[in-house]
Length: 513
Image 1 (cartoon, rainbow, N blue to C red):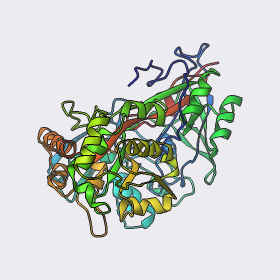
Image 2: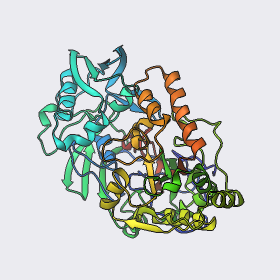
Image 3: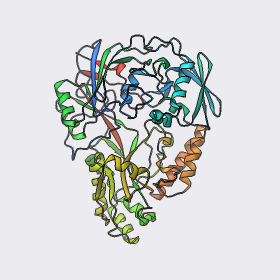
Image 4: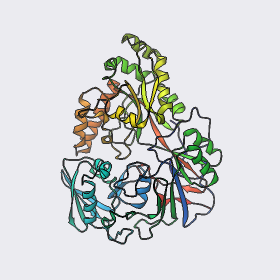
């Protein structure tokens, strides 16, 4: 793991040669900052116009219908939530200034005074109730957001200033879920441009390609420095890099690591921040029975040089991880768990003892992760397995991952940054009919269900650590690394403020002449 200088977030210093470039996970977000290790020189600019670009943007201006994680770059600028994560991942007040638990399934939120939507309407408890009711209406357009707040049963207006959120069962992370519920003026639910309380409002929209925002001067968190924002889709990485070089784009995310490194030589800064996810390979014993043998699973874990993997397959942007799902800073991370070290001789010995020489272990993945999966296959071949990578279209890989796989190994990246909690990763929990287990059925699944409703944080942390210990001892998953998000920073941007869910706080960006 490299120690990186600070420019609004972790940032790399001078560029250095990288091995094969890797496309950053499409869910990763990126942004902007100063050139080199020092902030850009010059005076701060008022009323700046900032352009953000990535391979895709929001599919909808309605935050309740926005499906993609990259879409939240837009929603965070226009809408607010009851609570939010600060840069360190700590829950902080937003539209709610305080909250208290009424009972195991109810929590009251006191709303911030004097907040208005960009439409001019006042925020009150009834507006929050209307938003919850709409998301829970059963309309398939809102299914993604409904899933994010899946335990919420209803909302009630206790008074104009207090709203009560009621869950169907005790929910340990109700506050986390509330960071994902964007509050819209109910009178604008059906409008082309729904109104929010955020620092910007929509000025123009070209579906799938461009969103133009302008400052909402009446917002309770109005921007002093940024007046206009362009959010643009540039699918081709080469075109995106060119737009940075010409000054057409200030902030780029989704660039391959090697392209980002090349831009460093032209005065740009690459800012990296832990992504809140794990690069892993699932071991599907239902497809290959020999994966039920712990010796085979341990051999797979011992076969990988994780430090080399991070440098070669992630371009150096990440932290080697051979121990557990969650990274440091998340509830349940256990620093005491041993990490599987690279041990070629021991891996070969275990393969021989298990009679698994030549065992065919093809790895299914998507084009996005082809380079990483090929690195894993190379390590497995070196210890006596026979492995190759099968690249599937995303439409084929999703059912391979979620329902039924023909392949014994699946390379993917599991994210928990949205809720900042292990509950986001239900793939190892209890399975439903038609779903294949990604780990052996054991106490892990029982603990996963138990921790979700455990309101005592200490007891819940113990449950999550017990889950991590089970996976570690059984080598149930091939943990590889905790990847970073990449933010490519134009020289005129001197500060890049990020929220705890790695989203850009555009209202606080500092632009210099």
